[in-house]
Image (cartoon, rainbow, N blue to C red):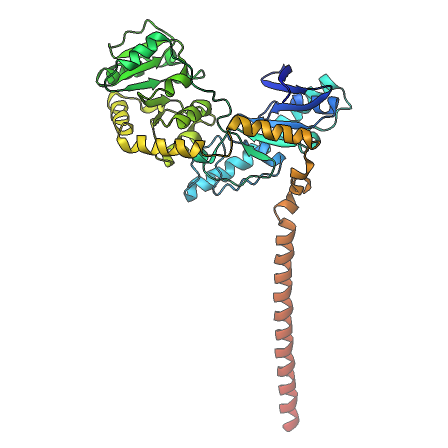
Length: 409
């Protein structure tokens, strides 16, 4: 396998080239900033799309990956795969609006940037995107449930997870000396714990003081006054902490990377989602029986305490361990899976045989609208012909009867 080397970036998307004697492959994130697709035409090589979360609707649409809104929640929704009627109505609406927004706003914006950087003769971005060789999705059925996938969409959930490393001495000592186990609390890099309102911070401090477990709290202000059973640090090695056997619970915002790390290590979760894919991740894990959800605006002394005590029940730990077993029970690791399929694309010149023919169908054909209309008008026509025939026969018979009666008279 050739080494990956980044060659440049525009906004938040990155392009990686696999180097040999020539450029063999481009790997780029598929989200909203797709202007880097211009490199594909420039170097005339196959390319792979990488999604760091559950597939956005437009990424699925690009490769004709099925996304039935009846059981596939939009990645920004607050639904699990088992939705009520009202949730299915909302989910279908979100799917439609997501696609309209992407095609109507994002694609034209990306096209303008491509032509600015790569020239006016750059091909339409959609024509290029539809030739994607592969989509690597950072998901796994143990979290988001079973979903239909096109042949060139591969689940590589947990691809970022590396073997756990030795913990810093102070954190290791804090965990080992805890007779009742440890809770790890981290709201990620998007939600800064230090920006929480004072009453919510006080609620956490008060709740933690009531627990027999120790708490590792990633908090940007290390001068925060906390009880003796709490350690505060501005940064902590999350993956390595979650791997420790004495860690009993992960309090999180529901970001997918941390979620995957917790699932990998069999840790129950208390999730406080904010936006993006966090609510959907939270609902998926709650449906799997390994998590409870606490809305940020519902943070109170008693709600935090009661929710923590609920998730610390043995049934959550048992289910989390079972989920971890299923997560790891695969033919090869997530990283090896990604490497295999990337090399497969290179070996097979872009692997166009994996590309669905549905990519080339217009919407009315893909959704069978023309077929539905054909059957509809066929049925209507048939009913009309039958009705007209019966009406004609009835009128004819009536006329014959009348004429016969007149002759007898």
